[in-house]
Length: 282
Ligand code: MLT
Image (cartoon, rainbow, N blue to C red):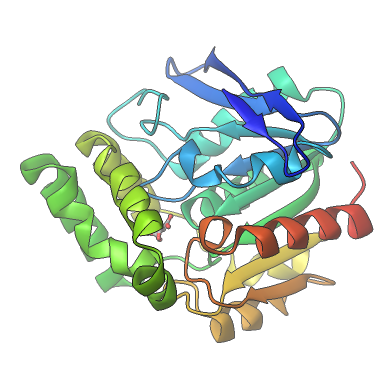
């Protein structure tokens, strides 16, 4: 795919597939050169949620966008996966595409849960971590039940009946009112997720670890980002847990909901580029 920079230059993104040790294939799109920056998408989305990051970030970074198991062009290995499996997939990606240096890892929402699990399992490879529109805690019992119900609904009725209720929570009220094209685009991406992948991801998230009591152990440069209108990772709660991470930078982006890279791309790109430039070294 050709991507144009704002200044008129253009470059190509390259999509490859890697076979992971557990037998699933991981689709990865990459472009640019510089320190490696791996971007992990949210649920139930895929690489297309990073569409506005290429032109801004690939001029300074080797931007690497893997798709999580079952989403986009990545296959689901086993019907049951864990966030640890997904973090190990990211380690497979790193060892193939960025073996020489430490990486910057940015995960949004479910991608943030995977980034936390990557920190738990492979932190020696991290230069910096960016946790966007996410949270470190586990689920309450009722949230867990809701996830298991969504997993069953996806398998029984298909993806859209199961996930449609999430659309208003993914986008801020301003985006939904003023950006019908972006709203339709997110709906299109959600609809394209396979029911068994939706089910597997919900079951994996229901069983995720709770990192709340471990935030003081984050000794690497950390940026925490959320959107002013994010109902799933609200600014007040997000800034409270960000304060537990020594030296973490917290940014709340105006006029954006849960999908800050799509809803406030310019602010998102500037925020992460300046954080990485000022704070983090590979
Ligand atoms: C996401 O955007 O990835 C989801 O909101 C994560 C979740 O369901 O907790």
